[in-house]
Image (cartoon, rainbow, N blue to C red; front, side, top):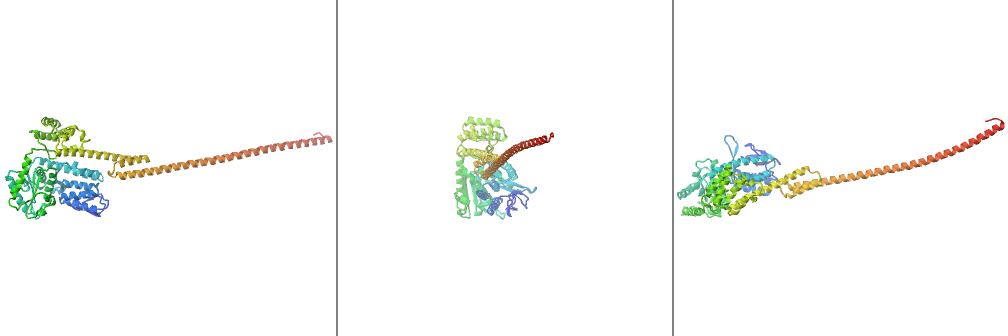
Amino acid sequence: MAILKCKMCGGDIEAAPNQTYGTCDHCGSTMTLPKAADEQITNLYNRANHFRRQNDFDRAVSAYENILNIDASSAEAHWGLVLSKYGIEYVEDPQSNERIPTCHRVQNESILTDTDYLSALENAEDSYTKNLYESEAKRIADIQKSILTISAQEKPYDVFICYKETTDGGSRTKDSSMAQDVYYQLTSEGYKVFFARITLEDKLGQEYEPYIFAALNSAKVMVVIGTKQEHFNATWVKNEWSRYLALSKNDRSRLLIPCYSDMDAYDLPEELSMLQSQDMTKIGFIQDLIRGIKKVLSAAAEKPVSHSPGNVDVPYMTPGVTQLLDRVSLFLEDGNFESAAEYCDRILDLEPRNSQTYLYKLLVQLKLRSPEEIILNAKSLNEYPDYQKAVRFADDSYKAILEDYNRRVEVRIENERIEGIYQEGLLKMQSALSETEYLGVASVFESLGEYKDSGDKADSCRALANEKRLIKEREKEEARLKVEERQRLEQEFTDVMNSLRDRIKELETINMKLNIFQRGKKAEIEKELIELYERIRQTRKQYGKDF
């Protein structure tokens, strides 16, 4: 028996070899179990699930990716990776005792379009497992939508202060006190600063994410403050700065500043060690920090921007266009496609080369409410003139997003095409009766390469084709032998009949000869009788007596 950990509460689940489902003795949750080929895989799953339950999502992501490097078709690993990327923690409802998913790493991209989620569905062991993934994903998508709605109402922040608030014992850290000093200094300069101790003081813990997400996505500067190495690596601290680092990779205008005290700069996490850090014990630290922040924010202020789908900046826009785009976005959200089309035309009258507007026109044409829905389109976006113009007039960053939309559409279409061929192959395999039909189905599966178990299916079809060939050859040989046996019997019958005819002829000859002989004897006897009669008559006559 292998011991696995429940993905809800962390309780033990005993799993027998080849067991598909398991029930946690602690919380009663039913979960799908990975097909562990050996102890190494089982340990990797337990390690990945452990990190995720500890909300150490970065390490969980890495652990699940290690599993997928070994078994790329593991639905459970793809699903665990999805939960880690979206920072899903299952929290017990005190009233219903139900495990409710909480999202700590919301993203603009819907979980329902995530590639790993789609891979989990594609590789699910059976319909029950697939339904589990789908139902959970829909719950998470609803939570995600709610968080994004709240986040959209938040005003943008200039600076995000990241720090550890309390010690393991529950007391306030020195980091928190120093972060608050920085907060007051920056707010006195007129900046809007996200500082959890104050910004979130009227919010419950489970309600933090919308505001953290809004601040992370809008802040041009993040200041990470720490006095110990373990504070920089604390789960929620790392959750914030690692997410901001990921955003920075796609937006070079963002700046992350590690600030340390009572420790060596070499003890900073490896990801932060490459950045220009600040020693808070040095004289003039706060002035240097503010000067650096001003430089970044001033540079950002010099370039008017508008946020396109996915929080990507697009080039300078004509005054009024930003507001019109917001109206179009709201019209689309409400499904008011007629008004959205009208406002798109207004924008293009002002800016004929506005890339985002052409994307919105495409959404109107397709009757879609958000760009995220476009990846479910039935054909390549390259076939639409509005998409072609959107790509043509987009800057590099927005163009990358548009092309990614189309790439995902084409990948999904190709996957659906391949899946269609695969399913058609399965049906043909079930109805095949002859060697030729099985060989045709084998060619279909071989054309799919390594998709699912196509290679195994092709081998099975060729084996069945060979079996049909052998059966046909055996039947042909049996038929040949039957013909030869029939011919032999017919020849024997003919020989017997010929022999009988010859005997009959011989008998007829003998009979004929016998008749001739008998007729000859009869004539001879008659002659003798006549002669005898004549002698008798002569004798009688001699003696005077008539005959």
